[in-house]
Amino acid sequence: MKNIKIIEVPSEIGAGTRGASLGVDAIKIAALDFMSNFFVHFPTEKIEVENHLLFEPIQSPYAKRIHGILNIYERVSSAVCDTIKSNFFPVVLSGEHSIAGGTIAGIKMAKPKSKLGVIWIDAHADLHTPYTTPTGNMHGMPLAAAIADDNIECKVHDVDEKTAKLWNQLKAVGKITPKVLPEHIVLISLRDYEAEEKALIEKYGIKIISTGEIRRNGAESASKKVLRYLAECTDIYVSFDVDSLDAGISKGTGTPVSNGLREREAEDLISKFMQNRKICCFEITEVNPTLDKENLMAEIAFNILQRSVNVLLLN
Image 1 (cartoon, rainbow, N blue to C red):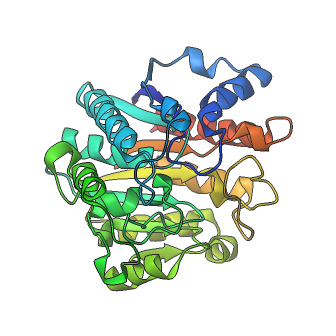
Image 2 (image 1 turned 135 degrees about the vertical axis):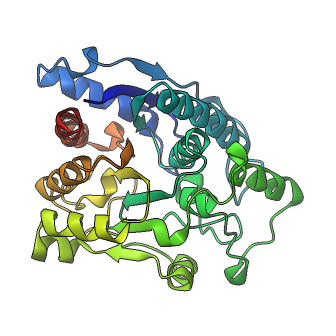
């Protein structure tokens, strides 16, 4: 049986739409609405964030608020590292997906010799860099930071020296670079990405499992395929962005995209992953209740969280 610790990171400085910082509390409210005492059972650590920067001028247009993101990376990586070293399983509830870079750093800090696999369940690849980003939003960059590839071949921006220095520091958090090899990443339900990201995916042959494949073959078949692909990894991190769900149900997130997973498909898929003993960390991100009605997105996220943790506790 695993000891579970919940790490709350209510950050939204990496997102382009306001409100993601409320996502963690929205999930906890959903638990109360379901009359669940889920959050009473586990120790919780809340990470200090940098949301005050939303009220300050943007200094790095191609990596917005990157100095704040760097601070959060260091705090999150330290918390995740300490959690794993204390023999707890970290369940990270984050506002927006830039935080995942800090989570990955923390896993590698705790297990520097591990071959880390990443299951990235997301409509987006999050493989942009300050040199390629169309928005400057840092939640589109965590996987690029983890594999430490600037994608200079597809460069569209000249990045100032200060931003470049901060970006290099971000990639180097934990003093391990890269933290993940591209061949140890699986992108699930990917369907909205730019040419620059496609170039990186093709350069490394990064594995993609489409929504259609999951629907045709089922969650069990898809999960087995993913875990076979990551067979040489010693540890596996699962990151679930709620925008992987279809836009028809994922209204409560900043970047909804059509042709996504159904709630039950995502729930079944993640539960299958959680049965594998290599899974070392689980993260849920990008719930934004300000875009939602009746807290539906958070309720779906809580259902997935609760089932996933229950499966973890039984394995």
